[in-house]
Length: 183
Image (cartoon, rainbow, N blue to C red; front, side, top):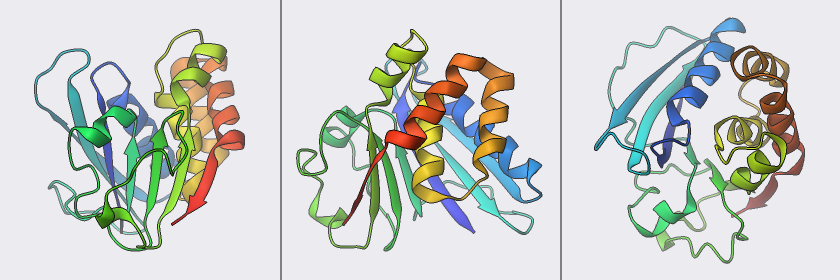
């Protein structure tokens, strides 16, 4: 089973991106679910959620305490909460940021554990392609590129159905342009 923890802020599309991911996984014949968690429900407040993907039925309905992947939709969260808590060795991290991996100043607990980190300025890409600074579909494109856990064309098709051509183009652009680092 692959466990994913999403971190973002209200209004960035954490829930919608996870829903598209789950729908795409299920359409390819595997199992997936997403559990959102909201603190203060207002735009800009930190939000997070938990997804699981497996080839077998998933019975666990709890938070993800030891993720195989983190999707961080706002790099300012790195300085506010321990988003890397419980991250497993040989994991994946996808971060929406303008910074390089060196500039992000990752905590010691996240270093030298065999991570593959994908960094994309998803907000800027969304602004340029979609005309709105909502990074959710752009981050999905980067997620697919970094992890290869779900079929790219299925994700793009679901983005197209849910949000239209511009969002599908933004996901494609992120898929192609995400910078991947090995740590």
